[in-house]
Length: 283
Ligand SMILES: Cc1cc2nc3c(=O)[nH]c(=O)nc-3n(C[C@H](O)[C@H](O)[C@H](O)COP(=O)(O)OP(=O)(O)OC[C@H]3O[C@@H](n4cnc5c(N)ncnc54)[C@H](O)[C@@H]3O)c2cc1C
Image 1 (cartoon, protein in one colour):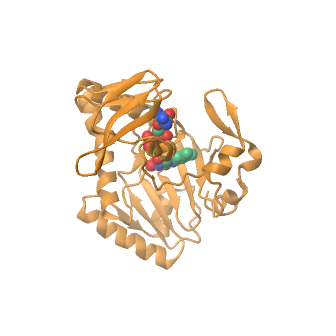
Image 2: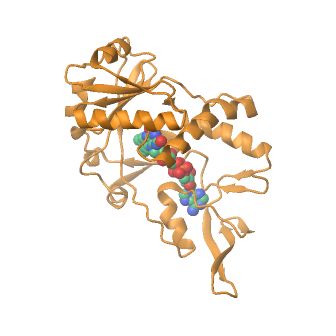
């Protein structure tokens, strides 16, 4: 990373990262994702700590996928086989075995579960700090409060458009290479170079419960049919859901009110009610 410069318009983690649930599930239907996630897990749980001496905040509490129908259980069996190829340990559990692992769970309507013991939860701020420390030690530079305002592009002798530099509020940097990692703002940064970024952002929310006796050390839970996840948060749960009728970024921006340093949605735009019906059945 020597010579790399990270330009952040505010402070690191001030984008989506600071409020992520931080769930890391290694088993996904695509083999590229499985490899990428297994690699990320290694970096966050071992390599960064070895390299920097700092703990990233990684918690290895495991992950549990819920199958509430036979087809879903078949899919999880296929995921388990895929995991074997890439060295990701997983186990298909019966409802009774699931109850033993997670005594608080209602398993009456389950066909089974997929348990991945080495899944876990990332701490966004801790991971970011440790990554920054490791990158700086290898010669990278992080410049905060430095918004990118433009990207210089020139056309070479063969008619190919190439990046030539980056404009910021505090000066410009000449470079032939730009990595656009602006998250939900990536489309705006892409437009600076005349590039269309096919990314659609949508509003996502989770609810944090009060203390639940006996929930400590339980795995994170994902119920794909109910479109919800339960994330262990100390001795409570964060309960998040994916809406069938999501609010897209443009709509969310229209209804936003500026809070100190962040984006706050008016409560009227938070469609929390669809989260609850399926989810409370499980918790
Ligand atoms: C509630 C919630 C729960 C989530 N849960 C999970 C989960 O469990 N597991 C999971 O894997 N993912 C989860 N995600 C998604 C995850 O948080 C994001 O994918 C991830 O944080 C994106 O990181 P990023 O670095 O790409 O973007 P960001 O963290 O948004 O970083 C982009 C940065 O670019 C900066 N920027 C923008 N424009 C400019 C500019 N012109 N110049 C300079 N800098 C600029 C911003 O200030 C920002 O800091 C969740 C997201 C939310 C909202």
